[in-house]
Image 1 (cartoon, rainbow, N blue to C red):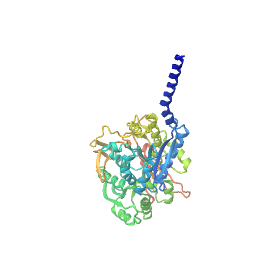
Image 2 (spheres, rainbow, N blue to C red; image 1 turned 45 degrees about the horizontal axis):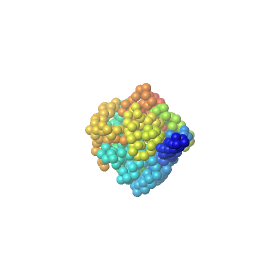
Image 3 (cartoon, rainbow, N blue to C red; image 1 turned 120 degrees about the horizontal axis):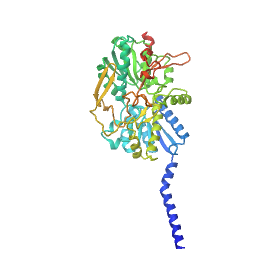
Image 4 (cartoon, rainbow, N blue to C red; image 1 turned 30 degrees about the vertical axis):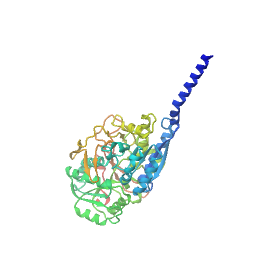
Length: 474
């Protein structure tokens, strides 16, 4: 009898112990994963940030969730992302409710929340803005280890533009399509644009381009006719732009077309990534060549399927913030799996940091996602870029206005230095695709001609023949 009683107590004890041990795991598997989306829903890039997140969550949940757990989105609306105080309130509210945050298109909004990141201690994946926040990781790791940038940083975007200029634009001059290599740089007077132009100008000069002037435009400027007169009289054949502000991008693009200013325009113009905005310009964007991170091309095995699904669901092509955010939700899901289901900040940071090479990268619709590691970070490392117009070499980190920008900055996504063969992706990191806006038809339809990298174009053997001069330059 005593033996049976002892056995009974032992069995009950083991059962209780098992329940105590398994209880947290059971609760964890049932608990919803909450991800915050911080976006300006009054602008196209913020709208598509949310759409990309929603599409990814729908797909993941339909497939059973993450280790049996569903994902729930919590949305914070920053309107236009131009109000720093609103950005702070939105971020603080989201970070207090969720396991991680994705979003932020404008660097000014990122700048506003910098003081809150160490206090909130939540993983933040910046899916739009190309500068700030991760620049704190090398020197203040304990406070800013939570920040990752799945979108390439400003310095990498400079590198992408330099390679496009040296490979593609220079060849247009060589073929006589453009009359000279004289360049004017035009940008909005905002953080990312100023940082971009401070780095690209001298290096374009090293590739044989002649920089005639740099024009900074105040946000809110309504009359750009004097600028067009100046461009027309400058003798430049080429303008490189950086516009993330939709208002200024609209004024510049319309005025360029209406005044028939005879310069070919290339560069960053986020407005023209949006199909609706291109139609509203009524053909003014025709001939403009833009850098994009969203193309209906075989960038990875997942790219075309993402494009098709997004267009079917929303009726428009995705802006780059949609694709980067879509991939970031999947990246977080993979990080949670790597962390054995843990969603505390330290576990997620460690898991995200483990995506640190091409071999360990998450292959998304936009490319391979891996982050530059903190270990081995060298500000003096020489960055080498090879173009058809010559090679460039510069330090990994260079001073640029309000901060120091690093090409291989820890926690920023890797840029694609090298072409690959027999791999799932064409490059070993993220790369921009350069597309030209085609003429607008009577039905509102238009084409986006992919020009570069040439292997993604309709004529990989001669992608230069695809370029068309703007209508007012013919």
